[in-house]
Length: 195
Image (cartoon, rainbow, N blue to C red; front, top):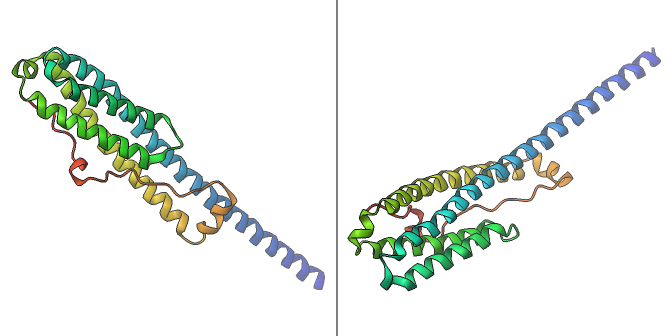
């Protein structure tokens, strides 16, 4: 009888151990999934920012012939664009540095569009209108990508702090993520690109 009891106890303990291992694996894989969702969301921001950065030189080049007296503004836009590209291409800087560079770029793009109001021929230029439309579309895409990323980061960071995943996270590489935030409330709006 004691042999049967010991055998049943062994099977029960073995079954509990297997369930605990499967539960641990499920929690770990859940963290991996959320981490990859954050990575994908970040990649979408990166794609849209690259598109934005590629449009800016075309915008400036189109405007150069019309805005000869605004060379400083045009150069400032290009410098801000180059700084934003550099921040985007340096993965060690993270979302905060990228957001700061993008904030500066947005400010210069706003200034550019404000000055371009003084040039009626530029406002009527078909290339300029097309670039403006693409830039406005890109700004909307950046906004949606940023929202998706921040939502993903919120879910991931929340999971990292919840019991029992706050213990499981120590068995892998699961650092908390930064939000991609804009600091200036005025910059939370997409630049107005309509003429």
